[in-house]
Length: 392
Picture 1: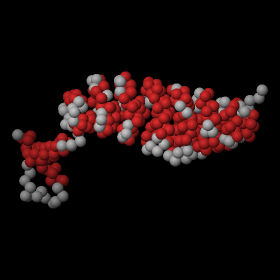
Picture 2: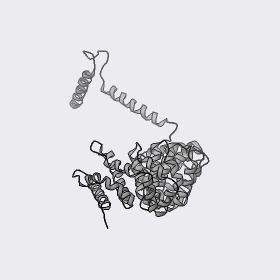
Picture 3: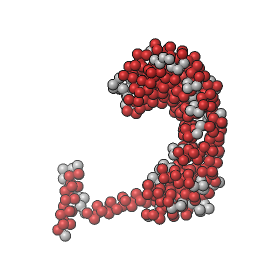
Picture 4: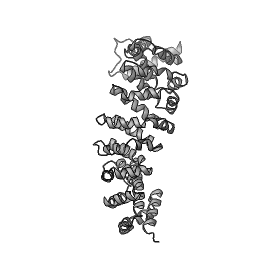
């Protein structure tokens, strides 16, 4: 009892200090019970507000929440299924609930919802899958399930929101090597969507190009067989830097095989790529330099790039310093410098290229001998100097 009185006195003193008036108002009698009841009413009102959300289903306590919500997905009423899906999407932000969904065998129950007649149900189901694939364990579980075929069918869905969510899921799956391998069979369809969706919103085009880039880094032949170089070449001149960046990245993946190098030369893509070397976006520049780096390995690529007078542009990129840039921009600039040096090294194998580079040899020597220079860049510059100065 004494302890309780002391607590009441301390609480009263604290409230009096908070009160802005000179004295505690006499008409407000302090009551700890009143204070507790007021707090309880506030908590109850907040809980009531959460429970009266008409867009979500009530969530059970603890580990019963996920199973009960999945049971509601079998209800014939569309509104019930939508509310259950909305509550599940909210729970998937909790890693414990996400793991329970994956390990509890609930994932296969979403298969029937992917073919639901109501577009809102399909949109919400794809959103739930997008949240699940935010974790590596979710991506692996989806790849092991039978959901990928019906999910890929939704690339042609009438709802733009559904198509966007499908592209988000596929893009996250492609982050895993196993996911990119599983999506290789979809590359022809993705290339067809790239041809059809020129007027699609920017996010969808970026996701589509990013997915194709991941798949093509694993195996470029399916995209090359689907006229990939020509289709990607049209995106290199897009007004959006995000689309230009992803298109150039996918083009770099396609230029690794010899067939890809030939197609880059035949499709007249190199003039556009040389122009992108002066783009305002560093990543666009780096990806364009990467395509040129791979293409100049073959003789045709060397000759075309020399005709386009690419050597001075590459030398200008190599000469730029990075001391005053932040860490992320320096990382991107490093990739650009490395690709440019390797492209110059390959161009030095041609007589005309060696003649041009001999005139600028001091620049390459400075980059190869600078103590403060990044070791990878120094080594690439040293290789370029050896090739330029090589004599029989």
